[in-house]
Length: 183
Image (cartoon, rainbow, N blue to C red; front, side, top):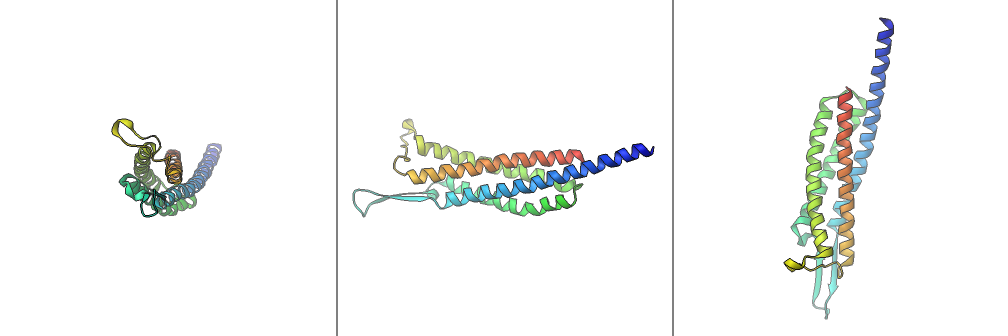
């Protein structure tokens, strides 16, 4: 009987240490996702380019807020970034108390909502960026990236951070589910 209890005690200690390691990885991934969403929002939000036409008085401007989809992209990235900053407190709590089950379930739920919002905003923005690069001849939408190269480079780059943060949110959901199953 004593050997069985000793073995069970060792297994419980290993589960606690494993969940603590998962909580530390969770914290690091959240910080990386914060930087990804913040960089995406800032890169898109500060994107504009002006091209002179034949004279100095007529100019063409390309700004992110001319297209509502890109405005939504900035708002969604800023919202997810704010959520990730607030969720750092719960992530630190999980490092201190590795057996907290209700907060892990709450994080799975909230992370799933943020993943849905972030992937929807990034996918819609990706469609606009595709049109900016390739255009659509049947709809008479011309590609603008030949003229506005800096604008297109920045909006394309901001998509990378957003899709990277989406991948990290998927990993966070999986890590929380694994930790919850191990309790």
